[in-house]
Image (cartoon, rainbow, N blue to C red):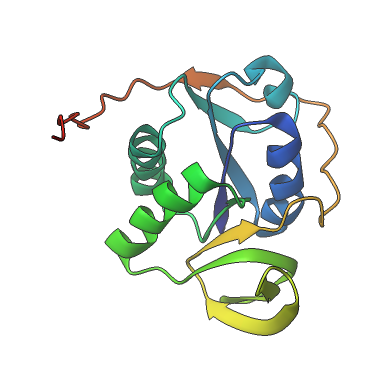
Length: 168
């Protein structure tokens, strides 16, 4: 059975991505920052949480779960930290990636979507093979409903390898 990995820093963002992710079967959630993980568990999926919200930490957490679950789709709402983190994942595994997408449809081993560019003034319909990374345009997908069964919550610890260098 195919699976998907949803990444987000707020319940609203994760709920939007879940609407699409659930079409594939099992779902894993990586939540970061100050998000209510108990409320996220009410959607019925396993939630992996990291306290940090920097791109390096998000990338490491997502990579860890990606390596374990091997999902067909990594999906999140478009946000700067997620663009940075998930583009690293896409580059590492040579996955197709698209941002600002909506009208997502899964069919067999591919995903079709509409993508906005030029600040949304132009639209493009496209298809990508799975596995893929998609960043959704905000507030264009209805939010998923909570489940009758609760999912597990697991805290992840990541150490950042970012070093600050003083510039003169």
